[in-house]
Structure formats: structure tokens, C-alpha cells
Amino acid sequence: MKIGFTGTRKELTAAQELELLCKVVQLEPFEVHHGDCIGADTRFHRICELLGIRIIIHPPESNTYRAFCIGNEVRKMYGYIARNWNIVDETDVLIACPDGPQEYLRSGTWATIRYARTQRKMIYIIYPNGQTQIEYG
Image 1 (tube, one colour):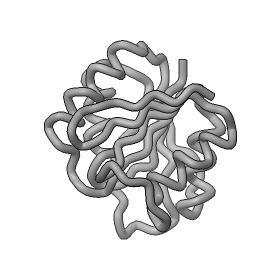
Image 2 (spheres, rainbow, N blue to C red):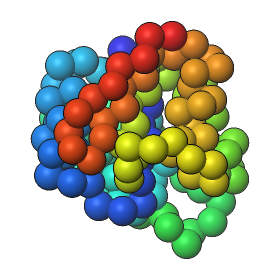
Image 3 (cartoon, rainbow, N blue to C red):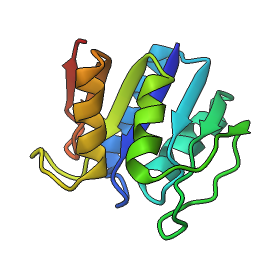
């Protein structure tokens, strides 16, 4: 299974990070994809690195929020929206860690979730309190 990841540029809460670790272990992916931003992407990267999972990085064109993680493969740089859609398109499941419980516009994390819904992907949304909402494609 290939997992795509999207998340807040803020740090994950301890509850989110623990649930993220548990979800990755449970799903047993052979490959993961993320957008190489500071915050949640960096924590996801470290978790997958520790678990020995193959990591594909989809860097943004802008370096403003880039984490410069080192993965097994780095895709071509794209703008944020195209990059996020590529992550969804290349994976089977999306894990998302938003910065709050409310969906809102002008959020890359929520925009990626909305796109994954249109592509009928299974989505795990891990909220700051550690609760997970599962959406079946």
C-alpha cells in the first residue's frame, strides 16, 4: 500500500503524533509520499524513516515552508495545489493531520482532503485531540 500524507505547517499535538504512528504501523505501507513542508510533514517523515519505509518527496516550488527532508526519491517541484494533487493521485490512501476540527477554505490540508474525496480515496483525518475520522472512498 502507498500512503499519501498532508498536514498542518504547525507542530502536531502529542495525541496526533501518537495516533499517526499507530496508523502508519497498522496500515503497513511499503511506500509513503509527502509534500516536504515544515511541521506535520517533517514528523511524518521521521516516523516513516524510523520504520524503514520508502519515502517519496513531492517538494513545493517555493522554499518558504520547505523542510528539505531526505527521501528515497524526490519528485519534480510543483506549486502547492498541483503537488498535493500528485500526492493523492500516486497513492492509495490519504492520512491528513489538520490544525483543527473545522474544515475551512484557504487551507492546503483541507484542499487536499477535498481533492482526495473527489478521487474516492480512503482518508484518515487525525484531529489535534487524537481522534480519527475515517472516510471511505
